[in-house]
Length: 248
Image (tube, rainbow, N blue to C red; front, side, top):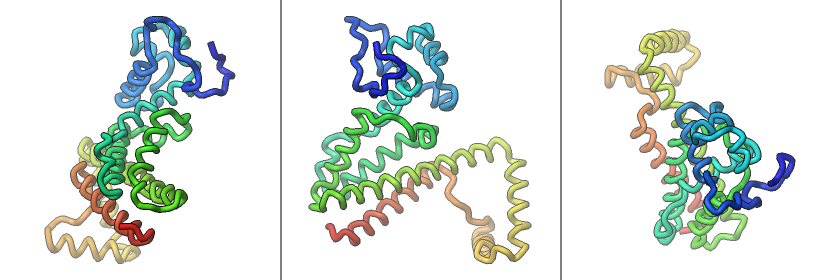
């Protein structure tokens, strides 16, 4: 069995050779993801995963060397969720890359902790499949390889940034619903700041929307509104990329 000092990725190591191993890498990844989704990434420890599986902690080390391996399995399991059906890649490049973008965002929103916690995860087979799908999505553009990479990177950056802001908005909305007094205090502070004259743009918008609807405008705070905003931004970005890269 490989030692903790073996720097090969878990994917380069053979799975346990038992005819019927008690646990699989997929089961370990699923257990770790459940813990992170329910309790946060910090709760994912070897001891906690073992308990979730009904195993002894030392038993887990027969399947993985350390938490680095666990994180790699978690990341790869998430990217398996992000894969789109092959049929989604057979339309126009815009339709195909938009499908990849939507699915990726959906997975990031389903595992919000992952945006900050999996940045050092080792590259696994489903990461390669995910990138392969992105390349297949833009293959019909006829762009040089470097330009295809640039197009994919722009879409990936938009998806991850949008998901991060959406998670933040939903977290704030949930906290506001749980503590109305906190919201009232924040609104009172904000109004006082607007009255200082230091924020003319915000003050003008506040005055205009309050006069029109009786309620000041604010950023979208529901999942439906945030998804609608994502779709508009995605279409605008693809319009810009198509024009800049001269692709139909």
